Image (tube, rainbow, N blue to C red; front, side, top):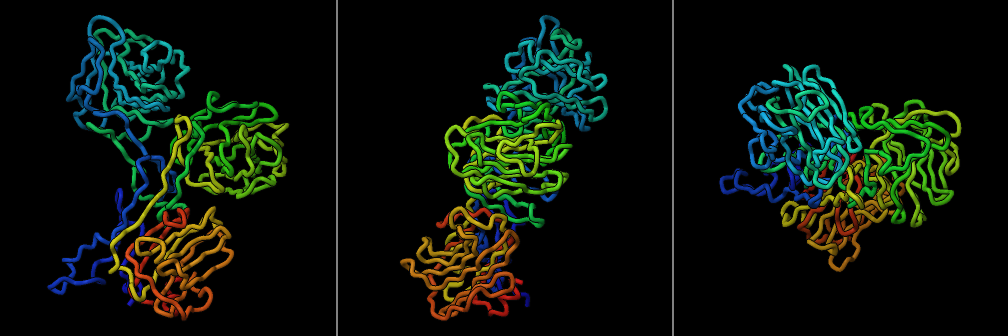
Length: 604
């Protein structure tokens, strides 16, 4: 018999939905019904409840190695242009049932009447962030479609030529970040335009009789599948009805992360990205010193063409934004080498707070005395995420990213000779002593918050061994030293007094402990000085017979003088000791105390 066949509960991050992470074992290891079979057992009692609050700021790494985000088409009735959610300017009309780009008859004819100009269709979204607006369009009686901002003024308009798939012209454009037209076949094109944040979030699509003109009387074009999203680029179309279309890392969806190879459950504490524009490095949000930027220049770590080309034009190149508001703070950014290898993260307050990185050779250089936790992590395709923690920061300090002269440059030792290029994406400034997963922010002042992940199940005393049992936890630890003690796997009686837990300490140790009522310690084991990597940990308990194994080796000696607490709750990540930052590959519980030989085999 395989050891796992003895388990009473097994959680592997493969079966889940919003708010739930499933116990994948069949019920055969627990009480059979009156027929001797297990169909009468309510297995859902052993499923974990999962919660991450009401925000949608979380990301994860997918099995393809790309960053996955929450995506939302904030329009409603995205392909029902006759619905009252859409506004048709007097004289404009739509007719459905037209042949579409996707082989359906779901396209629409947008008509302008025979009098007047600037007949359009629009919908207010009331989203005060960067918006990328897209629509599929085909030439009708005329070849042009135009898009403009909320006011409908003539100062921010992109004209698309549907006869040859080109940008005809751009008028004004102070609100316009980028625009694109892409052929999808049979004369159809996807037209998109990205606009800076504005309060009402309304974008107007209109028929244009000739390029660069608002005149459209008596003319028409075909349209289908409109989308408006908080992004620098148009992503895959999401159908919406009376509610918006959503996809990706949804609210309360467990995050299965593949950054360590196999899928693992990502559990993190609450964090906020304080940088208002984390992907759009424009001059209004970022101050540029001796450099220029080109938005949407290259493919970023999320797989879309929304990375920025950052070009040094003279000595002393750096970008700066945002105030440090707490101590410590962690600054991170995704970077890719083009022809300049050295990047420095530093604080603008005083000397000493800096860290140098070689993004061509994945090397960490010198750093200041107030700087720690320097990291350079590969995200594939030449992309790295560089990060460091600044301590003793003061009010008025600024987060800065600079072209370093050398890998050994001192604070502010910026490039003084050669000019060059670097690709950048996804800047993040967060309160805390280490970096957490990327939190996108497309214009929310004061920052965007990702709530803590919480995963637990209650009322399962029959799944947990009451007089004897074994906890097994396989985890990827990326940050060995915790900011505060983190109880990563915990079983208790509904409060922390009666508990058995496996934790990570502030001194970089793995600790397994068992307490009974009143918090009386019964058993304690410590693996000292861990490093980043994968760990298999088993904690086996019974009256006067308790032991812990890590990666096939026993930690300390078997405790032969201990009592077992009564327990009914299982918690992952966010527990009484504090939230975890690590990635759970699997959790198993056994209703028996496995032998030491079995523990060695289970964790090897």
